[in-house]
Amino acid sequence: MVGNFKVDEVIPLLEKYIGGLPSIKRKETWKDETPGFPKGLVVVEVPKNSEPQSTVAMVWKGDFKWNEEDRQGFSMLMNILAIKCRESMREDQGGVYGVSISGSASKLPKPKFFVTATWGCNPENITKLTQTVLDEMEKIKKDGPTEIDLNKVKETLIRERETRIKENGFWLTTLQNHFFNGDILLSLEDFKTLINSYSGSAIKVLANKYLDTKNYVQVALTPAPKTETK
Image (cartoon, rainbow, N blue to C red; front, side, top):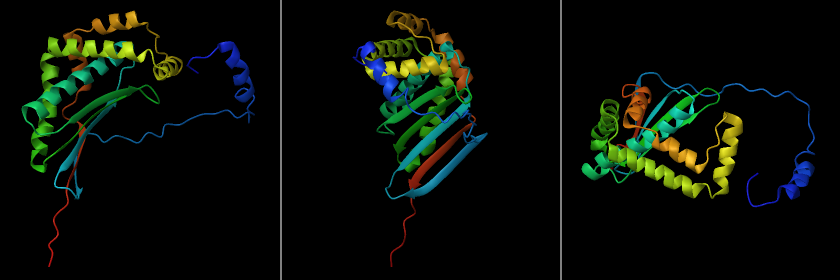
């Protein structure tokens, strides 16, 4: 529980309404029901859209090294990739109204990472925009992020943390991750130190570890074929 309350007043309520719940004295266990992820390159087109436009999704999944350095660096890498794809796909090419690049890592049942890229576009631009995402990945793998982009991400993450530490939801998630995943509880100053410790070369190493331009799933919702009317 997190929020504005007095601990001494809450504990009797927890004892009464939660601690007093009956137990069936059963030893619980679990099994991994996670569906498998395709190997190699999988490209699927679904010509079912009633509108004359397409929605594209690219998805990556792989093994993740679960430690604080990779986790925070991976988050920064995703933010940097999002900046570059937005600049290339929307601002430079004008091929999309918006593009979403996101990534996350999970510890259980096995440490894995996910990366997704989604956008809407004209059907004839699917191939070009898909290649743009892959090209931006390769640039970061080859050269690392620019100092401007890296500093921009650092400033954004620190500013977000300064706001979020005032919210109950942040602390609830933080405490859950501490108990379930063993996350270290960082003060704001410790968080700033961690974020500012990342160099462009460190992000480049993570890019080469987690950005795979050869193995992914790509699905495109494309316009349905026009039916002839008699």
